[in-house]
Image (cartoon, rainbow, N blue to C red; front, side):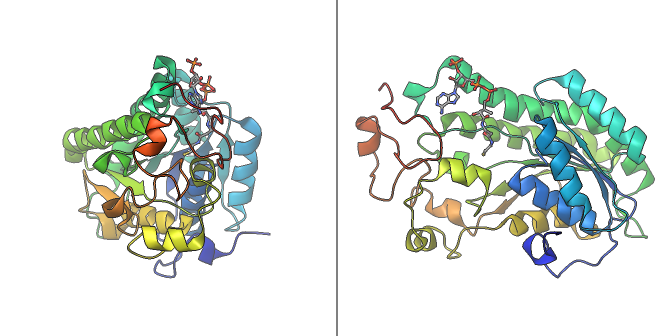
Length: 317
Ligand code: COA
């Protein structure tokens, strides 16, 4: 059974606004990525989902295709964004089979909870490679297609049809810094900077390049891995000014906005979709329980014992 629209798309958007458009998305089989893809496919786009796992990626493509009859959704698994050649082959295949690439989401990311003391040089490099280099590789592999798309779809376009749009998934940790997330903070700060450069260099070609920065999003693989399972609803409500954690739909709606005729003049910036949570960052950190206080847990070399994965042993401070 298809996922109900209300779970991945608000009622604000008209059906068909992305008819004959093609989305290329890395990390599209994940919780946020599949909602972004569902939303665009629902509104008329075809899509190509890229992922590391063949099984998960192909299954996600089949599921997403159910939201609209006639939708073409390719799942190309076995592609690691750290490998440019694989990614380029996937972009070429997507353009060949679906007729081009109009929208790109660079969403693939890696994360785990660790203080600097427990991060090996290779651990830090791994996240930089997946997030930052992976985003760069995605841009390099798809930009020729985005240039073609932007040339066919001037911005603004009297018909309202858009193309040549790029959105990278960022985060908010680096606005303030976040204990146990130095690797991700560095990687996402670099992504923000990179997207500014893409806007500068490719804006004149008609491309828009932005980031979306999700806050704590309910029910995602990321939060399941990063957040302690003993955080209760009351603590979540108090931690975010908007009084709740986000939903995948909140991120999908921001994606639709950025790619739509309503987002024509939004370029080189970050859409922060976090209920103003970053302004209270530290209200509830990742990788710790509500009872764990800064800096005591760091000095004790402890992280939450209630994480889905993560290293349960004390870190080497
Ligand atoms: N704490 C500290 N170091 C860690 C770690 C943790 N929890 N998890 C991995 N590392 C280190 C490894 O020890 C290794 O370093 P080393 O060679 O010095 O020992 C390095 O990171 C690479 O780990 P490895 O498992 O070989 O990398 P990978 O490329 O297979 O996968 C991730 C890396 C980050 C993607 C992995 O954590 C993962 O698969 N995560 C699930 C998906 C995910 O993160 N989704 C995003 C959610 S927001």
